[in-house]
Length: 261
Image 1 (tube, rainbow, N blue to C red):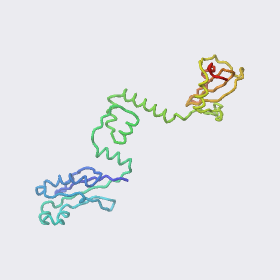
Image 2: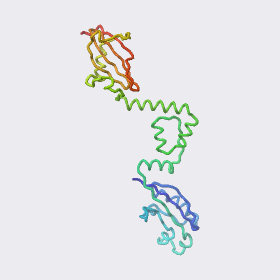
Image 3: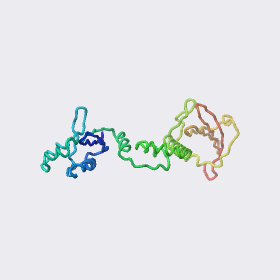
Image 4: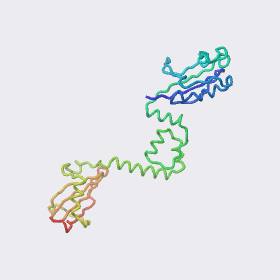
């Protein structure tokens, strides 16, 4: 849990001047002293460590009577203090935040520098959201709609592909695939290196040829089914989209001549 301090300077007329939000109370000292400059030619100044939070009725708070504080300091004359800055106070609120809330609030209210958006990826979008840069996001979209959509959609596809590269959406039961027959990438790299000259076959019935079944190579929405007979390799390519199973091609290839059976 982290804190941000909202500090308010109250003048002798009970006017409230919000100085801002601070990650550390000492960061507010210069701003407070800037307000005190108008009193007694600026002879009243706080030092780092003077401003502290304390437990209030409803939680931690900041409440400092400046005249009482300086009157208790031997460097100042008590009567002059009450004459110069009577009723001047420092008030404030202590806002606790979880880490992710802290970063968002801090970037909205404390880090107000402009962030120029020149391109948009998923990581950049998330960074901008975390920093509360909604204005910059909307401006970039409004000024570069086509470019922004193209950049973001392309990056989303890359991220999605990376996240799902080892995942398949094929229903093995529906496709009648026995998981024991699924071979890994290394197996197929070595096995297929023995063959060359792939060509498309007509929609032949492989069962008539009585080939030997080797196994499956599985991808996200498609799979390959491999059979051998003699020096020939037969490859069935299947797709599985929207619960629809379909064989879309049949290929054949032969063992390389320098491969010894």
